[in-house]
Image (cartoon, rainbow, N blue to C red; front, side, top):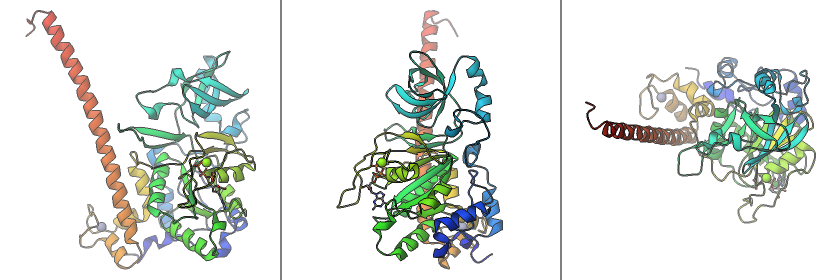
Length: 433
Ligand SMILES: Nc1nc2c(ncn2[C@@H]2O[C@H](COP(=O)(O)OP(=O)(O)OP(=O)(O)O)[C@@H](O)[C@H]2O)c(=O)[nH]1
Ligand SMILES: [Mg+2]
Ligand SMILES: [Zn+2]
């Protein structure tokens, strides 16, 4: 066995490669073979990699089989909404709605029965009653959705176009349901503050969610100016990069401007900012927008936590193309059917597992286990395997819970049918044998 097949993923710690200009240059040179097309990718400036291994992962189909998106919105397609991600496929998809008198609209923000949307005639507020989905929040209109809007005195959204990607987490309610955080996203920026100790497990959880969505994750470490020693920023970036194979990890400071050029280069298409309250999402958003459009708020002095300043998801056009979705701070992120997302998140463990002697190895005590051997020789941190196990267990638990609910619902339906049959039988005088 190759002594450390996943060493290839390790972050290149050379500080000179960490400058935005260098990163930009490398990206333009085509070091990233996928050109940020929604696949895992390997910008030459940040990761040293084993080409064979990278190619295998890079060629993996997008999680969930979602159609992958182009890195920037196609500018050649002439349409008033091109800057918002409208493209030729969408245009073709929309023909029948256009014939029915509808116009395309992208949902900017949703609140009780209404949505702010952007259309070819500019921004509008529209009714969403026709597309409400009280029983399944995952089907309800969401920021980033493309919709068919009936124009007029009382504009109304009457159709939702199929989503190409969707970030889904399990809802906080007791019913096991998926909740969509944002739709039709190309890049998920996982925003993490360097001001407080970095929680790798939480980043891995968000990476699983992001990969599962079909979009491309990027980790942005904010407030680099708050870390006194630049060496620490470098070490933390390297640590996070080790926990995020195939993902760009960029340290930024909205105060000094450090890393913002690099961030702009990789945050392309429809970008959603996710992370805990106070991580600096809206501040980063303002830096990318070049304008103080988003409200920001101070964090608590004692623990560095935010005060949930952003209260609704909102979509804004970025000056260099693409759009930005800012979101309220996540209190917790429950996984939702994220099996494939977990495989991407723990890609090096999947690679190692292929070398295990037994196909069904669970990497606990089996002889010839390549995963345990990697832990033994120090190339795989034990924490990674523990984190993978924990998240996989959680994912299986939520999946089982969902199945149980579906089974119960089905049983409920059968009960209703059986009851109706019994009533019909009674009406016929009990002679139906
Ligand atoms: N020094 C420094 N402070 C920052 C930086 N980025 C954000 N902050 C501060 O961190 C605090 C929280 O920033 P926000 O942008 O409001 O955080 P958020 O993630 O949007 O928080 P919620 O909207 O509550 O989810 C604010 O006081 C910002 O000024 C940075 O790069 N450097
Ligand atoms: Mg905010
Ligand atoms: Zn094994």
